[in-house]
Image 1 (tube, helix red, strand yellow):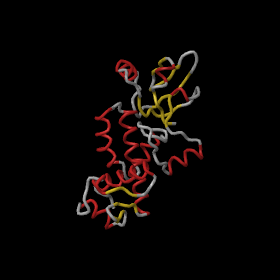
Image 2: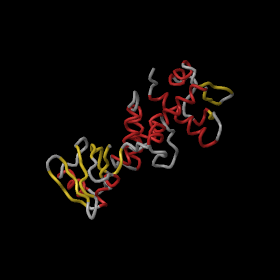
Image 3: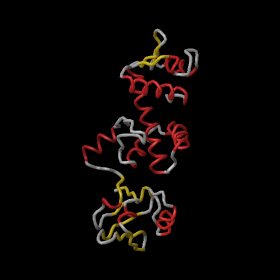
Image 4: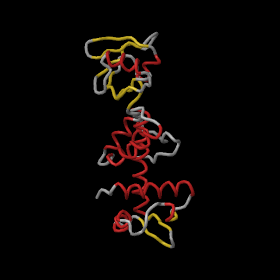
Length: 214
């Protein structure tokens, strides 16, 4: 059963408090909610948290749910800031909105696209998922810069990561768009690749800004 957005935010806040202070509880006055809050009643009814002596504690099931929730939040931060280049307060707000959509396997797809990051943009750890463990075992990094490809290797373009609008426009004019198939033909002295029936040459700096799914 999917939790409400407010219930997930309580789990996140409790996880962060536990992470920062090394214990599994938070003082109620730090959490900005009361025990009568419907979101708390929701968490309590599913045996995810409990309140004792003015503190809210994780139950074992709640700790695992909190781990999943903070993972989705920090992946959303990475997506907003690294891929969509939405930074600062706006990036934080949109990440908070988007994280609630990363259920039912969507978080796995985002994590794979981002190469299974270990930290959020603020340096906080992102709890590893099953996809991360599998990638480490198999050596499958998922999405990598074009510079990691060997000549003759091909894959699907995942995204372009650049803050330079002129570079973005140039690459898009070449057909470097998410979902298009790209084949690296040569990596020295310049990177030559094929998209569709056309071939293009770019320098290594621009090649590093094209991320491809093997």
